[in-house]
Length: 179
Image (cartoon, rainbow, N blue to C red; front, side, top):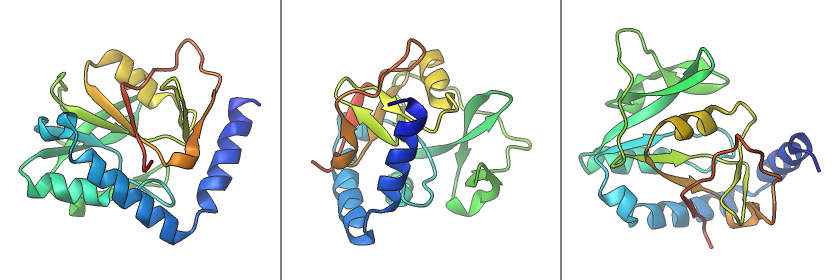
């Protein structure tokens, strides 16, 4: 199966999940995430803003704010992705690829370190820590250029044997699921 076909299959599968299952799985994933050393020891959380049937990151963002962590969200432009600090989700106004983003005017992107944590989205992952994203390569490029802790969030039914990873695909450091 090609990556394009795999993306379509898992997008359809994800969109067909019941709201109840998604909420339960996402709650379990959230509870596991906040107990990881990577999360507890990081002062800066780089996190995607979830849309649709993606694993919900709202609780992660709110929890990080309440516990004194800085939160940065991605912005893609000119073939690359950078992260920008937000102080509230109220700052997410613009739309890019159908995703809420922050207006980057007058802002500097964050400089990431090994102590920071990047929460990585995926349509599915394989048992070798390879992820299948949406096909833009933004996270692969960002992670290959920046030394940062990273955890990919995935629901248990979206872990597959093999996604057919290619040389430019970045292997995730840690997978976290509801299983």
